[in-house]
Structures are given as C-alpha cells and as structure tokens.
Image (cartoon, rainbow, N blue to C red; front, top):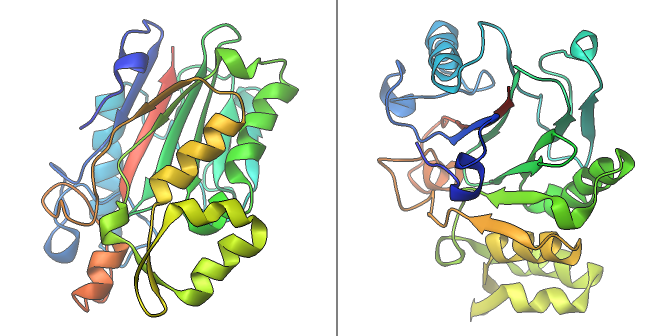
Length: 253
C-alpha cells in the first residue's frame, strides 16, 4: 500500500495505491488481484475488492471501477443516482462523496486527482495509448468544465513501468514522433530499431503542460518489483498466460 503525502494530509480524503500484497488470489494472481477481466477465479477477485472497500472505508459495492479500453473517454458522476459500475472509459471525475473510484493497472500509470477548493476527485488510467490520445488532458478539462482552476489541482502519479524496463520498437517510437517531434526526449535509442520509453516522464510532461504545479510521483517500477506489483510486460517476458491487476483508489467523505 502506497500513499501520497499531499493527499494523506487532507482530512476529508482517503486514497491508496494498492500493491499486490494481501488478498486471496493464488498462482499467477497471488495476492490482491482486483482485475475482474483476468482469468482469476471471480470469487477471489470479489473477495479482494471487498478487502479494498474495507481498507479505503467505503460500503460494500461502493467501489467503482471502469471497463478500461485504453481510450481517452471520461466518465462523470454528477450525483449518487448517476453512479454506475463498470462503464466503459479510462478516467472518472466526481463530486459524489463516500464512493471509492478506482483504476486498475499492470504497468500503466494510475493518476489520482483532487481539487481541494471545489471538492472534486478524479482518477485516470494512462497507458501509452491513452496518454498519447489525450486521456490526461480530457480528465483535466472535465475539472475545468466544473469551474476548477488547474493551479488548484493536485495530481499524483502512481507506480508504473520504468523507462529501463520498457523496451519498444521503431513503429511505437514513430507514433509519438508523428504526434510531436519533441516527444523524442522520452526515448533512448538502445540498438537498431529498439528504444527505451519513459512513460512516467511523458505523463508528467502532459500534466505539467496543463498548468498543474501540485504534482507528486510515487516512483516505483512495476516490472522489476515482482513481489509488489502485477506487470503485463513481465508476464509476457515470462511467457505466462495471464496477469493480475493492481488497484488505485480515491474517496471523498
């Protein structure tokens, strides 16, 4: 369990970047696998989600996650009646109290947001595709639609895959360069047609470009820390058939 020093000091807020520690899953999913989309036993995943609800302090079935598709789509809950679980999207923004909103990751970047003036929370799932296609910008624009000032927003970037662990091919590199040549700064050429990609650096740059100064990073590599995190890329490297998902949650009381 990992916490933001910025968010932890706020009385009406609860949050956590959960590791894979604890939990009821076995085998490949050992620990706190919260991914209902994995091939883990559903009963174990549901037990894990109940554990998270208890730890974060919300009632049963008040932990809301998404059907994540690496999109740039935002889900907004205006009031308690509008809250639904497993809608398709990759970010949630809400002013509703006493519901936990969560993001599932296994190398991608979980980001938690909070506006202490307007009392609005948010969370976003930023893999390379979502980050490149505007999930962070769209999330922040939703806060702005709700009369939030970017300068008031707190953004916390959670554990994700580090540059040293993220080798990509030339076609991947070209996707970013065709969008903006300045994106070259997030790549280090390793050998012919192979690069190391700094996903965290790219995400931080996107956040900073949106005039968010109150930014914090929990800088841990999900790929190398096998005891702490699930990792899609590590599972591929090990030729495993599937992988678990960690959860990051924020709740306002």
